[in-house]
Amino acid sequence: MEQSDERPAVWVGHVTMKANRIEESNDFLVTLGLRPIVLEDGIAVLELRGGTHLVLLQTDDALSGAAPFDLMVDDLEATHKRLTESGLSPSTVVAGKIHRSFTVQDPSGHDITFNSSHVSDRPV
Image (cartoon, rainbow, N blue to C red):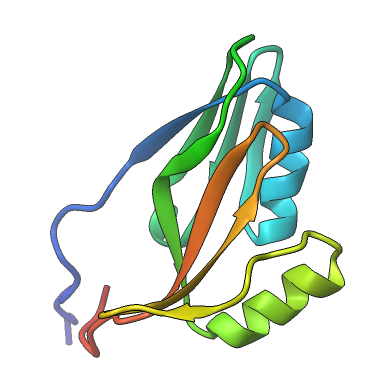
């Protein structure tokens, strides 16, 4: 019997972020839980759950502020603990209207937000 695929028909393929320290940002993102795919001169590609790729592009600019994306995890408190134990100094977990969240700064200067999950119980 053929099983139907109940997942949504589309997903985010690629998200880009500039980095002024490609190798350090790549290693940092691997520590966060992303899967390394490519690390070459001026570019890094890392994979997230669902197959989305984060593409880091080299810049010489100084960077600061929020990353152009946020991340969601199944267990926010366990992730916060793991990152703290890894020496990454995440912020305090705060409660918002929809998510609990915290941030951690990548080596290039971006603040990356981690959110608690609110994924539906349907296949994604």
